[in-house]
Length: 172
Image: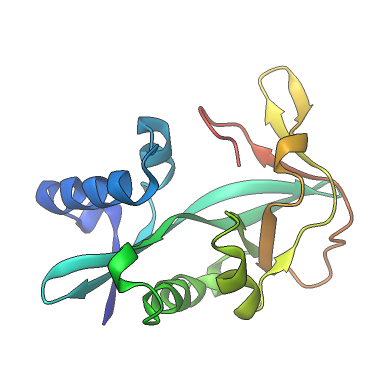
């Protein structure tokens, strides 16, 4: 069963457990990646007390067509390899998607492995070019084109350019 808790409600032991889980799941999970997933809601799935799946939803700003969108941004979605194909990823996503009403849109940067899960849940590929609002102004992020998915945001032109707020490390 999935539980949802804000970062502030997690103990130091739980945060250490989640960080170790994400380190193991991604292999190259940096301190900046960890920071990106903090400060929002975490969806946690445990099996016999052991963490088997995680995802978080943090607030970011995306800019589309001159409009600043209050965005729930999905970070750190992972399922333990030996527990995949049991619906845990879908449980995590359902818990995070349930928070959509407080945002203009939900968004994420999808790995190749995650795309089937997101598309099956109705997430749509953003077709327009991506950029980041960097310290010196907008900077194109062509390596991220074709990897951004959104849920909600009815009426947004998904062929339009989209920009994210700046942050250290991977901006998307």
